[in-house]
Length: 613
Ligand code: AGP
Image (cartoon, rainbow, N blue to C red; front, top):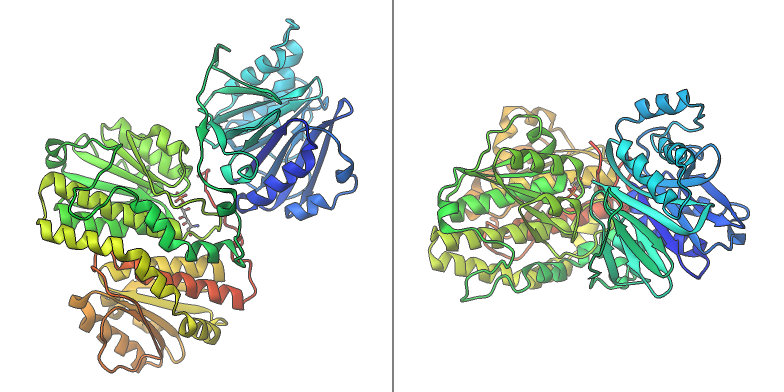
């Protein structure tokens, strides 16, 4: 949930650490802190609130150290406060640690350490780590150059749960030791300086060359070297990965907020998702997949498992795969799937969708299906993310870094990728006629231009947002795949405007929710499927009769109706229409949030990636 940055080099560490933290505030923003080795001692500075509160601390600008670790926190154990902010030190102030993740056995470890005379000053699970390191360090009688590393290794062997940690010590002032397990961590390589981060954008302005760390790999970082060790402290080599994201794409690029930037990036992010996978007149091409016709024919079903917006993308994908491939698809919420003892086996293909690739429930759900003999396929936006190391196959959305907590471009890229995957499977299976597939390919290739057209036509949407931004409740209605978009529109609104909203399959209205419709209530309808137009219109008429204010998003020529606002979007195959119809809903949520004066990119109580249960 939190963000980590580290630096070992020749320059002052503090400005680099603060700069990195500012880029990671989307991962956690209830407190921030840093530690450096200053004149032979550890200097730790931390404060509650945003990184700007840390920057304001007296003396922070006087720190001259060229090595340091830093953290921006999203509280799990212990309320947001300066004491609970990271870094944490051991009692002797010899080791400083920052940590992402959760130490599940921290109570046990704390009791053990207390029994050995240690005192705890915070309510965090993290404080056990520096004290454990100290415990092992002080008992190691071999006083060689690896003593610090051995102590970190021994401490990690005692930890249960997930973690990415950075450790520095005043006894070893030129090196930082880092380890990850089920939580992201990368090392960025420079000249006579190296960087550490939980997320690439934090250090992208400094380097494009990265080591993507593996679970349980101990890494020792000095200014001119990076060494990797396994748990037996055997050293091994590792290849550097060049990450092509440019630093600017991780910045706001002139937009007021990351979310707005990311909404407007969608023509391009979708071009990147399509890449060389889909061309007219050719079969779709996925270099990393090798599903045979025999394997796909033998499948009983496909499961799509994900959380939140990624799960909504899965619902759209289900419709496309079932229509094109004639394989039944079940979509499940990862936190439900993992505890439901799901009926999956070697005749089930399980697809996991996750922008971050770090969502704890989704990763656990993948591990479960794997243990039951299913093949697993991860769809992620983050190269080398945790889920892609667990999955049998991984394919990437290539949507570029998504910084705003509310997911927008990741969703549309996930749907595009699922559509291309469905065409690929249908081609292998020969389950759909070539013309249908070719038409769909044309529609997919036209999406960037059509999204551009949606983004050029925002005046009515802004006006409508201004009219309704003070409301307390709203409803979203749709049928078929329009219902899937209604769910996503409603989630977006809740997340960033804090307005309560519900999405219903329009046909369900009469079965209960219509009791809530009264004079002045806002109802948003999505109508893109020509076969269902009349049905949804008649549901919308029912709410108009009861005094509702209405906005309709449609690609159909609607007959004369009494809707207050109609947002026209370009026509496309109903299978992929959510990619266009979701955009006005993303923007509606955005404008409402802005009119309310809220922090669009960092909504309250939410974090970008949910790496704990
Ligand atoms: C999206 O707007 C949300 N913030 C959230 O629902 C998100 O989609 C969900 O937590 C899944 O994240 P993931 O794609 O990184 O797994």
